Length: 256
DNA sequence: ATGGCTTGAGTGTCAAGA
Image 1 (cartoon, rainbow, N blue to C red):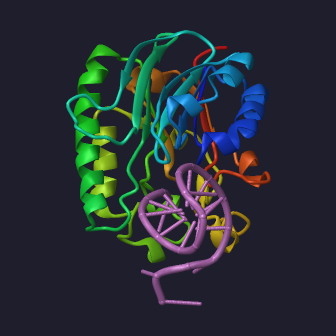
Image 2: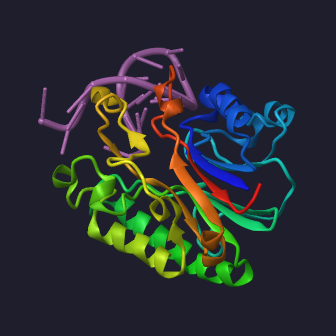
């Protein structure tokens, strides 16, 4: 089973790239973030024609998450239960016996800002919920744009980014609390190239100079981690015309 | 230098991203 995550930074703009990517890699499930549309602007028909059903939790202009899957998705959950939040950042569903949690973590803007406080509260709520979810669903994967670079090796310039947003100690501690639930960073279970990143700033030729951060992740419960055969970042879509600033991350679970 | 692009909204130019 192949599962993947991609922050597309507007599905309307990126739909042709998403369709091409689905045809090329044929994942069993693809989690999308920043669809930036309500349901009425969501390309259900185009995706269905490509062989994918879609579940969407969207809003106008900002945020928005979706799970695309070849097989039926059941037990759909939108948003974090008991966390009052108008921002559409979470959708979860079960596909082929795997609980997929697709999340667009808050950016946080700047350490100490109101948005930073919101990010930390959101992280606490997500972690609390996933603790319960793992009891019900031992085969669980958390995929998405975490907006956290977990370690200095996930940052092109750790000195410049020290204690800055996406890299601050409280954010990294929140990431660690997710791993303490038993969730393992699939990417780090395998040998990877030095300076592997999943996001590059549109400005200053960030991609060409590989000035990036690794902030998009796939975390796996123990049962799934034991079956994980591979995990990689696909930089190819970032080379295209009008790319998303994020690259997809994919993982291979078990046989097939 | 808090910029540098890109998007959506909306038709000015700004908020937000990371």
